Image (cartoon, rainbow, N blue to C red; front, side, top):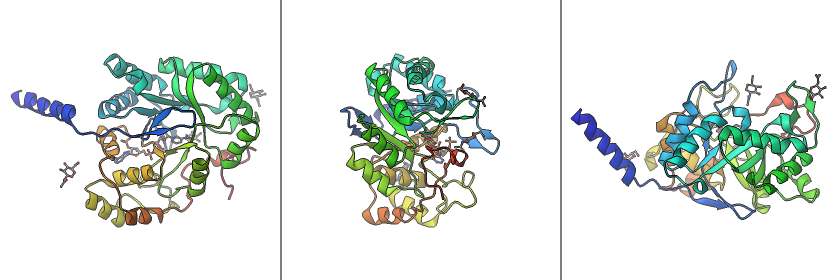
Length: 332
Ligand SMILES: NC(=O)c1ccc[n+]([C@@H]2O[C@H](COP(=O)([O-])OP(=O)(O)OC[C@H]3O[C@@H](n4cnc5c(N)ncnc54)[C@H](OP(=O)(O)O)[C@@H]3O)[C@@H](O)[C@H]2O)c1
Ligand SMILES: *[C@@H]1O[C@H](CO)[C@@H](O)[C@H](O)[C@H]1NC(C)=O
Ligand SMILES: *[C@@H]1O[C@H](CO)[C@@H](O)[C@H](O)[C@H]1NC(C)=O
Ligand SMILES: *[C@@H]1O[C@H](CO)[C@@H](O)[C@H](O)[C@H]1NC(C)=O
């Protein structure tokens, strides 16, 4: 009992006086700011398909993350966890965290691409989240598809007009897109519309996307990078996935040199690319590790080495949409 009490004191003291460094913020083209590291909340797929949410696993992860200093949460209507994210966020707000300090991102699903469907879809997400506004609303994919699986050929430029209406109503403070390619963003500009503040795409060691990042830098579009660990974990890697795995000797050696885990080396490297990594983790130790990356920096030599893992390899090609006219990725 006494022992437990002492342990609790030590833990609390650690928390209160811990030197967790907050994530620096990046400036968006619309004048707002965005925290440069986000917690991912997609439960992912296993061999049976989509992993369904079952209890409070995401709520607990988001609560732990906010306690640890995370201020940016990435979710989506399609993840079916907006209710859990909302419960955690509102609980933390009730406990004193300011709403303005938090940055909540969610996404419009493919079955709501009609221009007039966007605002109602966002209202549904807000209802799940129990929030008055989100900080960032993204078109999840340029590809439209109805609930009955048949394709919706609505031009994403029209969907984007709906997004701008959501922003004008104040329901989303910033708007952006996900899984769009360069030409698709160019079409938004060619239509005379405001550019997205953010592009969210897959970025990890095997898919570093240097030319897309350069394009976004030139257009002042901030990039959020999803699936930051790519094929690092053997349990998630497809057979054809290029190295590295988490036991890669060069990565392990680098971790030892900086006294950091391989995952921390990777998150740090992705930050150095100027993007916002979105590591997803349910385990508290993982959530903590992924945030403890603002107290060290990688040498140029190590960053050069990490660049060599870029093979243009995509873990989420969504080949099932290959025949949609707005399929965004290379078709080879
Ligand atoms: N826009 C899009 O189309 C799109 C697509 C995919 C993903 N996303 C977003 O990006 C987020 C991240 O991508 P992701 O979920 O595909 O994959 P990920 O973040 O690359 O990997 C998640 C996996 O890594 C494990 N992990 C996390 N931190 C770890 C650590 N420090 N040590 C060991 N293992 C660790 C997690 O384990 P535990 O959970 O067991 O802790 C989980 O199994 C998503 O959650 C979602 O928010 C967006
Ligand atoms: C996850 O599984 C679902 C159901 O099988 C599938 O429709 C979806 O495309 C999968 N997502 C990814 C990113 O592989
Ligand atoms: C699928 O749903 C859309 C939108 O509701 C409808 O227009 C279309 O006819 C449906 N297609 C099929 C094959 O049922
Ligand atoms: C290495 O990192 C661990 C975990 O963050 C920490 O407890 C330990 O003090 C560090 N060691 C050194 C030598 O800095």
